[in-house]
Amino acid sequence: MLTPWSISSIETSIFLGGVTALEDLGRLVRQRIEKYELLKAEMGLPHFPNTYRKDTDVAAFVDLYGGRDLEDLKTVTDIHRMAGRIMAVRSFGKASFIHFQDTSGRLQAFFEKATLGERDYEIFKKLDIGDIIGLFGTPIKTRTGELTLHVKGFELLTKSFQPLPEKWHGLKDVETRYRQRYVDLIMNPEVRQTFLTRTAMIKAMRAYMDKLGFIEVETPMMQGIPGGATAKPFKTHHNALDMDLYMRIAPELYLKRLVVGGLERVYEINRNFRNEGISTRHNPEFTMMEFYMAYATYEDLMTLTEEMLTSLVRELFGTLTITYQGTELDFTPPWRRVSVREALVQYAGLDPAALDDRKAALREAEKRGILFEDREPLGKILMGIFDEVVEGKLIQPTFVTHYPLEVSPLSRKNSKDPGIVDRFELYIHGREIANAFSELNDPADQKNRFLMQLQQREAGDEEAHGMDEDYITALEYGMPPTAGEGIGIDRLVMLLTDSPSIRDVILFPHMRRRETGEKQEEAEKIGS
Picture 1: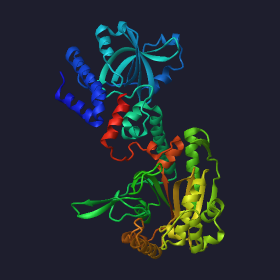
Picture 2: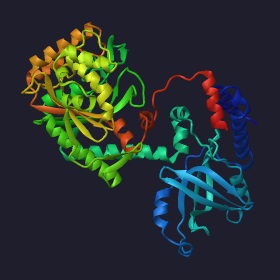
Picture 3: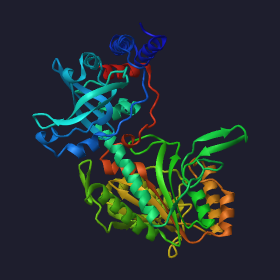
Picture 4: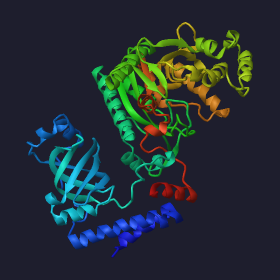
C-alpha cells in the first residue's frame, strides 16, 4: 500500500518529466516505493535510520589492503564499517557482488547467503542500484586480484526512489548534468575530481597568502553604490531601510578602505555578481580572489602571481607543463611580459600610427569589422581591437601591461606617460585570469576619474563606474602606496582541470528556465 507521501512523490516525478515519465520514470519510481514499503512492513526495516556510523572510507581501505596478496588477507580479522551508494550489482544465486562508492572512491563488496543468512540475503536482493547502505566486513581479494569487502552485515540507510541513469550511456547530456549536478556527481567520477581539485587549489592559494602575512577578510556583498569594476550590477531593495542595494560586482573599494585603516595585506575569496551575458567563460555569479598589498607596485604583484601559480601547478601536478584542450601550457618562469601597444602591433598587425590617433584607430577597427560609436575615446577603441583580435592569441602565460587610462578608472597613472596606467592582466590560453594595478591613492585624481565615468554613464554607458563619495573621504585620510589584484578562480580551475566551459567548474551554474518539452526530454534521458 502506497502512502500519501509516496503518491505525491510519483506525481512530482511525473510532473517534472512530462507524459513520457508517466510510462517509464514514474513506473520505475512506483516499483521502488512499493518494494521499500514491503521491506518495512514484512521485514521490519527501519525507516531512514540515522544511527549507523562508519569508521573507514574506500580510499583508506585501499591504502590499508591494496598492496597485500590474497593469502595474506586471509589472516586479517579486523572488521571495517563502511558506507556508500550501490552503483552496480552482479548476482550468482547464493552470492552477489556489488560496487559501492563514497566520496573517496569505489570498491567491490561480496555478499553471500551462507554468511548473511537467508533473511538478510533476501533483503539484500531487494535493494536497488542507487540505494545507500552501511556495510561491514573484512578484506579479501578475488581470484582476479580485485580488493573486495567480504560483507558480514549491512543496513539500508537511504532508499533511492529515482533510478540512476542507464549504466553504459550514463548522464551525458550537458544541460541535464548542469541542472541536476547531484546526479552528475554520482555518475561521473571525473566531475567529482574537478571539484576536489577546485577545493585543493583554493586551499593552496589560501596557504600561500597566509604565508606572506596576508589576512583574510569579508566585505559587504550588498552595496549602496556598486563599484570596484566596470560592469552592470544586479539591483535589489531593502525594505526596512527603504533603499536600493546592489549585489557587489567587486569588493575592491572596501578592501582598499581596510588598507587605509592600517590592514596592509588583506585578501578575500569572494562571490561577485555581474548582470551580463552567459557563455563558456562567463557566469553572472562567480568567484574571485582579490588582494591588496601596501608598499608594493603592480610589478611586485606580477612576481607574486607568477610564484603563486607556479607553485600551485607544481603542487597539483608535480610538473609545470599541463595540457588544456589539446594545447600544452608551460608555466615555467619567467612568463612573457608585453604592453598593450606592443601586443596590438604584434598580434593584430595594427599600424603604429593608430596607437596615438583616434581616427586612425577607428579605421583600423573598421577594417577588422569592429564598430564603435563616435563618443568612444581612443583607449576604448584600442582595447576593443585588443579584445577581439589579440586576446585569443595569448596562449602561454603572458602578462599584458600598461593599459589606456580611459579603461582603468581606479589605476595609478604611469609616471612617464600619463595616458597609460600601471596595470597588468594575466592571459593564459586566450583568457584573462588576473587583473592587477598600482592603486590610485590621490583623492583629487580619483574624484576626477569618477566624474569622467559619470559623464560616460550619462552618455549611455551602463557599465561606467559610479561616484563613491565615502571612498574619496577614505582616500583623504591617506592610503599608502598600494597594489591590488583579482584572480578569477573559476577560469583558473577550468585551466587546471581541462574543462571547456565555466559551467563545468561551478557546482550549480545559472541556467535558463526549462520549458515543458525540455523537461520531458530530460526524463527520457534519465529514465532510459
